[in-house]
Image 1 (cartoon, rainbow, N blue to C red):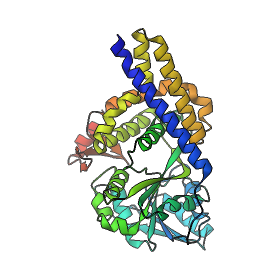
Image 2 (cartoon, helix red, strand yellow; image 1 turned 135 degrees about the vertical axis):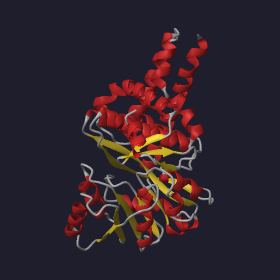
Image 3 (spheres, one colour; image 1 turned 45 degrees about the horizontal axis):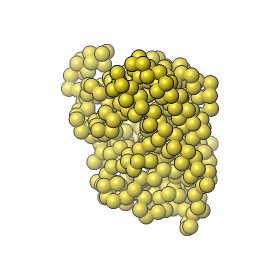
Image 4 (cartoon, rainbow, N blue to C red; image 1 turned 30 degrees about the horizontal axis):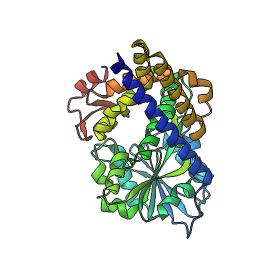
Length: 383
């Protein structure tokens, strides 16, 4: 029976580490970064777009109001009928003095988003590149914050933490998991020295380094292009740095089925990218192991594990990420954990994922293998 309680102890230690990592992050963010020692390097923002998210215009407008001396925004779409084009043109009209370009392309890569990025990078004029998701909302000093760490020649990629805004209940469920489960794992990874990964919320890097790794064309077969970019640049001998800013994304899942598919895709993508790390996440399933410990008679350990889990999740979500909605929803964390455990189990098996209306099959090394038989793809999507 004692053996059944040991995983709960490991989970409690893990979330204590997350709490320490979050406090360390808070201290570093509060002390701030030193002022820039030189001129600001011009930046090209590359934004691949597919469809129009609920807060899309707010997101792209936040990029057009940056307090940064010189930058351009390049939007890329793969469909000339994409509804987001109207918003992009509206942005151009609202900010006629800002360098904003729209590029319509027909990517041939398995990962069409990477194909769009390849075209945007080829059209970019400036030596530093920023890539982030189309629904990311940023503060006016965002570019200054994310560019500053790249002034260190040892840094190859800059990324940043993010929180989620959600309206529907399934999307709120996802947001709780993002703030209290995924982001603590990011902070713990940094604390113990795992730093080859970057987050799609923000990737800042030098165009020269992108050319060294063969450009976006080398990433076109992979679904987790953000992980591949970070790994390949760190393989050149550079480090990944986190900017102090926290950006915001919008989660648009309208149904539980949609939320489930999104989370399983994310889980399977992590599994094929970082297999050892994925199965190591078993220790993070604190609520499940706390219940196992209590069922085995270790009530104090189980309750202590739950308390530490809640304290860590609240600190990371509210204090570190600034997710105020979590104050009203923190009591849902244990329930969301059990959903997350089911996601983790589902992510550990299977190779197919749903992404942008397509069913994709992932190879063991994370490459995309498109379905040759559309009927088979549709049938598997119903599973």
